[in-house]
Every structure is written in structure tokens, then in C-alpha cells.
Length: 347
Ligand code: DGY
Image 1: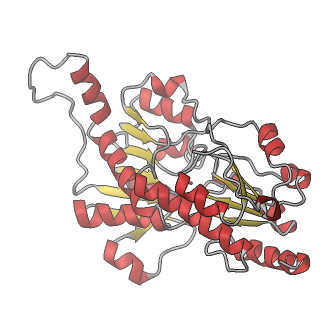
Image 2 (image 1 turned 90 degrees about the horizontal axis):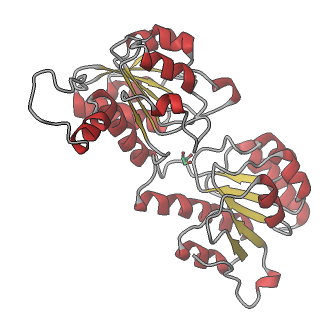
């Protein structure tokens, strides 16, 4: 992945910073429009390093990992667009961008099915104790078959609970209902229209009912400050001791330490976690447990999907700087504020 893909007339082009190493084809495509500066080593930049590298840039291609705060925007008043290669945008102060007419786009839709696959796999791994079973074999502990060896919990015919019924939630519900004959219940800010609920046989319930009735609860809600620790000690106490909990949404939605306590004390059977509040640090309390499957935030990690995520950000960015309409702004308000500034600066 190249360090600088600037072409001869680069000086006349808007300066673009790409915060992570991405596919060379994407860099080449962008180099036709921008003076591109990349994080070729995929180094983890501190906020100060990000700010330093953003000097003179009009555009930033980033992920959900780089904090885009008001102070950063104020330090770079020339910045006009932040295009994320991820669907999550909880790292961006959207209101601050809107106030300054900075466009923010994300990459919804392109990772739905891939993330649903991983969520379902993780739920199954937790329920059927796959991580534990694999470690058992690798450690040479498997000496005989037994009726009570690594007994897990059924997926088929059980109750799948979904907290956050957006695109990914619905894709997981579909897998559960149509593929595994699961009874689907869900809770969401708003109820789905009847024609979307019906094919899933999904039943809308309040959050407490969801927690009490789920055999396998999957979290797919976006992170907001209000959702921090949406699953904490009180919520875990409502769940069946035989239930599993899977989080493929965002770290911080679950109180990881409260979860570790519930798992350790047998108040919850198992968990599958792809995201953590302190990632990439994973609390020792979780790492010490056998009944939790731990993954390094790989929900969308397939080649095709990662290319689509980058592609979506590239499309947004090129549209923004060539007079087009960026396909996926994070909100209409942010798009309108950016349009107003675009008119003002004449581009
Ligand atoms: C996303 O797209 O938000 C994924 O979680 C990767 O960060």
C-alpha cells in the first residue's frame, strides 16, 4: 500500500488523508481526483498524530476508530468531508460536523449479510461451546466420547432475542427464523412495519420481556451515549441462567465486567463477543473464562465486504468533490449543512 499516490498535477487537487492502509486499487482511484496521503504502515495514530497529518487536508477517509471531535475540526477549518469506511460512526461528533458544514458519510448496507453471518456463527459457537471444545482437543484432553462431554444448548427451535432491529438485526432474525426454526422476539426504538415482521414471524416485546424470554440474545444496536451499558448487571439478572448473549454491535453496549461476573457465577450460560469497550484490550476477567468466545472485531471481515466498505467511502468522497450527491451521508441534516457550505465556497 503506497505512502503517497500523488500524480503530477497533485498540487491543484484537494488533499486527502487516508487514516488506515487500504486496497491499492482504491488509492489509485482516489489519486485521479485527490492529492492522496496514506497511512501506508497502518500505524495506530494518536489523536495528536492524526491531527498533525491532517494539516492542509480537505478530505479524510477514516474508520470508526479515529475520534473526530470538535477540537480536531477547529484545528482544520479547511476540512470539508469525513468519509467513513465503516457503518458505525459513534467516533464522530456529527453535531460538530453539521455546525461547521463538514460532510460525514458512512458505509451502511454493504456489510449487513457478512456481519449477520458472523453474529450467527458467534451465537452458535457460544451455545455449542465451540471455542472450549476446540481448546480441549488441541490440548490433547480428548480421550473418550461421553454422553456428558461438552454439553451445549440447542439453537434450532429456541427463542432468538434481538436487541436493535436494523438491517443487521433483521438479517440475523431471517437466519434464525428461516434457517433454524427459531422463535424470534425483538426490541428496538421503533417497531417494524407489519409486512417486515411477518416473514420473520418476529414478535415485538419490551426490553424486560426480551431479556427474560430469550434463549439466545444478540445485540445489534448502534452505540450512543444513551446505550452505554444497555446490558449491565440489572439486565443480566433478568436473563435465564441457561441463556447466551452475543455482541456484534459495539463495545460499551455491554458492561463487560458485569458480564464476566454473571458468566463466572453461572447466572448466564455463555457469551460470544466480537467487540469490547476497551478494545483491543480485552478484560482479563473475560479472558479467564471458558464460557465466552472472544473475537477481535471481525464482523465485516471478508475480502468482498471490506472492498465494498472502502468502495462505498470512495464513492461518497468522489461524489462530494465532483459536484455529485454523496450516496450515504450519515444524516440529512449533515448533508444539508454541507450543501450550504458547498454553495458558499463555490464548489
Ligand atoms: C463497522 O463498520 O462499524 C464495523 O464495526 C467495523 O468497525
